[in-house]
Image (cartoon, rainbow, N blue to C red; front, side):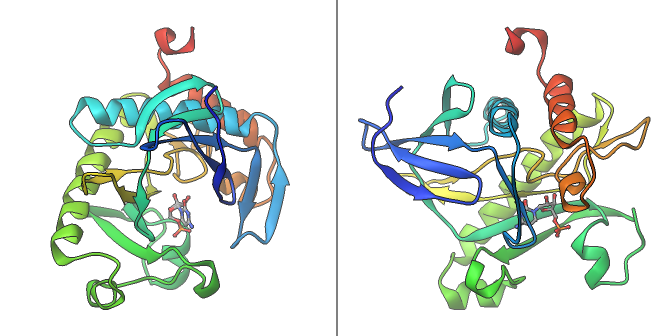
Length: 240
Ligand code: C5P
């Protein structure tokens, strides 16, 4: 595989230059972290599952006209991607009240949101990813008002597409986090990953949690849950 210099090392992924200046190779590592990186472990096969799950979601989104970084999965664990200049926003969409929202605001556990809530946090370890508002985003120069409107519209489309796809397969989709970047032509493009590390997935029948909340709460069966998500969303053709 075409793997050049390491450009960036995140908490769970590495980004390598390829021989094409406009493309990068993203390695999904087995490191799993929670609580601002304070809780850390290595979990065999996590990178493998997150790469195939993300690839499936990116392909699905491309089919409905969402621009994503995805080009190919040359081997599981490695994703060939369009190089993006990442926008340091964590764009969180919430269909149901869960997680930090319940700790911070008086919502009821499991309360549904119509329309969904879009929350933007500043991706910045030093400042612990604070929640932003539009004026702060503009003042920090992170995006323009037009960018924000475009990000909102794309995000809602992503939510509709994934929510329907997952509900058809018996999964509830309480919330998820995505990140965007700009490609060489200045287009806003979906980057990063969409995986059990960055989404909540609940089994509608059993109410089982099938995402990183298991790790956050110190429960067992984390990798089995990720495997189950992969099995549910990948059709037989993808698994060959
Ligand atoms: O922590 P909270 O409940 O606000 O998370 C909302 C959603 O965003 C969850 O699906 C979580 O996995 C995701 N998230 C993330 N990375 C963060 C914060 C939240 O992927 N830094």
